[in-house]
Length: 577
Image 1: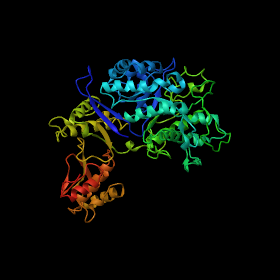
Image 2: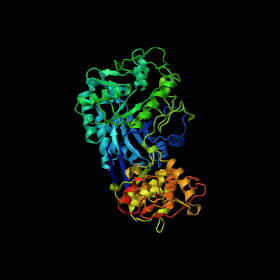
Image 3: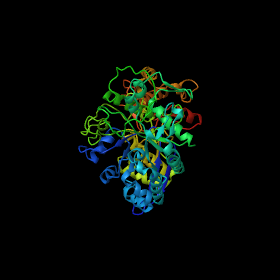
Image 4: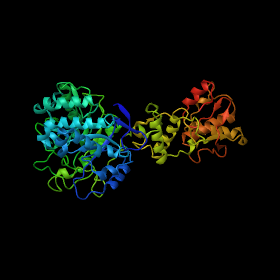
């Protein structure tokens, strides 16, 4: 999905230009932070809980001042909501929408990172009387944001329940209900496409499974390995009830001619306890023929910790792994918000109502079950590997300077890029910003969301050329110990992780063909490979650490583990890194 950035100067804002970006990246998982309870922690404690658990994207259901201020300067992406009770006013009065946008959105920028606005919540179900006003309200709110210069950075959508889709199995037959398809959904999808936004749909496979556990496989509901379910109309095989619901939604969009519009899962989740009660807002709509499977009657209750843990972790791990496509749309992105952050005692009809038991946390901030927004037990996404944060030159120097100052003021070690310091050269905004961004990123453990700076930076997985390391060091051979001991050390290094291919006959660093030069290369490769850890440059006294790059002939020992750059630069006749 595209990254759209815009420079905005808000009346009354700080003198620095405001950099805002619509960052609709794939592979993001957030949470819904509801507050229908009387025993929840204060917003500041909630923000700390989110950060401790690596949660970088949050939806809220209003514009509560204390909540919005608590998210200031955290970097957490926030979607806020114009509640249903304000929707009619926003639809009928552009001036009301403009005033709301100024008070509830612009007033909190740029400290609070607002990146989307939801207009209403499941209006077709919770307030059907407002259905004709929904698109006009969305239009007026978006126009108000445009007048403030925020329309490119903050997108407008509205969450729909899956009840908006009918004939949902097989998925390819999915379509929007007749009463809303032409009068509401077509103009809504036109609005979303025109403004570069996305459809928001709330999907709960749990309710389909709970309604028909004898027909729907538990593994199919959870996203565990299973035999799959065939869409006989298309021949596509489905291994996840969530994917079947996603594709039923995509098919409904396709039937109205919107074949490329993205869809975000505004809510998905599974309760850890409780029973559905009559009149539940999530009560499944008929028909629920979304899957058949091997239900055998011996599985745990539909609402259980085991099912909630498996479902939510499977969703999180799948999104983070990048496997976000569906059978109908293999290239689909998948932004997801887990419902919900807390068990909320004000929802439903009592503590044994499933509506009160969707939380990841109890109100005392203890986990209901284990989960991991950084990837759990499955292979982590690429950012967990060796990675660097670099500046995005396309945003311009003024944006880079604002982000650089933020990084240096929030933990990045910027001493090395001061005049006369070791990394001051090259004296360019791009080089200095890259240094500051990467320092901030590395010091925060390369955590999700720490290399963004509102679009001024991005992650790379190969060390950028010219990276300046103020703490660089090298491991070199001690000639005084003699060739025999150097050969022993060289042999050990090459057999235990050092990349010694560059010192083989004919390779770029074979010359000078001396034991000291070859041993130094092997020792240093071993040392860098082990991240310059204490004790990895000794070799029984045959090596020592130095802090100036040693050069043997035309070969400068690398200060990192990459041998490819060494070979490439040596072949050009340059000093190699």
